[in-house]
Length: 177
Image (cartoon, rainbow, N blue to C red; front, side, top):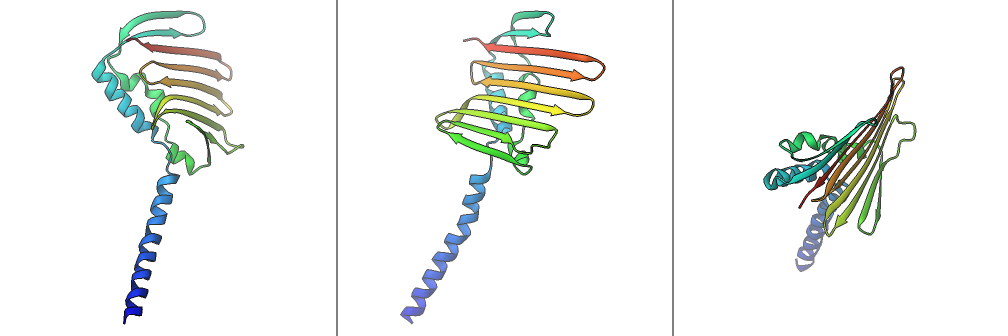
């Protein structure tokens, strides 16, 4: 009887342990939630309402002003459209080096390219760099995005449309203390 109880206890322990493994593995396979990060940043920026030294350039002229952003959701819209979990199903490489994590698209024949670099300060990103490129028959679109928490955001967009030429846009916002 004691032997049956011991075997039952061992089987129960093994089954509980084996049930926990896939959950732990699933947690490790999930990618960082950039949208949640930027939702939190947007909420923080709305609350703090900092003054921003904003420079906008289109390749021909530029303008710099100190402003208070009223719609941070719109201001950071380029950053919020990236879902690493969705993209990892389509082939996303993840490289970890110290406090830096780099995600890159791995499909070489794809018309879209993505590289995301997260630099962490303790547990949360302090700086995010994103490179997105889309190529097709009609246009080539390249975006360089840079966000440094509590310091700056930068959007550089180069768009080349066949028959219409090339446009370059540059937006830089320095969050003032």
